[in-house]
Image (cartoon, rainbow, N blue to C red; front, top):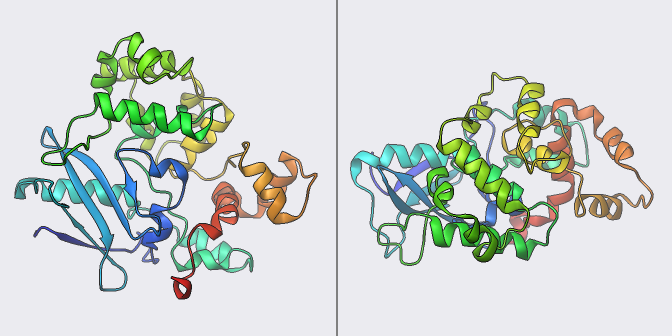
Length: 307
């Protein structure tokens, strides 16, 4: 294959994929090492391959339904033998292996969500389950600025520097996080009580006692995945729903200090309970959480004609 490479933006069921809706699908997607253009036209990230870190840029291509993957200057371009691996990682992040056609059939019958059938609904994920899990733990019971500080410290101090990518680093591996002492999590990342959770998670994964990547296996039942996640220190109901969504398991609704008031405002129902919200999306069955999230984030991307 050539570099830069071109990707066809279509799902496993042949459904369209909106590049902008995917890269702007949720706030955690914008944490380092990702950098996303405010209009969703470009994603830069640092990917590990061949024992080194590579700064790559994914952007809308001139042809509709396509995106281009390359290396922004001054980053060093990867050698040809790594092109296919890097492309596979980016396809994984965009969830191009996922079939959302069944969800679109349900959404098409709902006037409030029919707009998603133009290619919305893919939740940008990280290259690894470990990264998504760590970032989610860093969002629990804190302000967004604190989340940015914690994740920024993990990447900026522990991640592998990108080849030729000045000041850019990959997300740290479990081994790199495990090697950091308690003082780093306390004084540099300032992770508070989360520091012990993050370090323990990293050590257990690095030593092979915990396989979080196995949670990405679509053959595992939702109940088993949920049980394994809840067994991890730092994962409660909110973090569980968030990680499950990033794993492509969309039944649970993310109910937190942002989603609840946002739903009340958009629905005009000031006294709605969690059970009431769940009832409102029950018809979406295994996609209930995804339908709920999309109903809250429609305004995050401007319609094509308004750009």
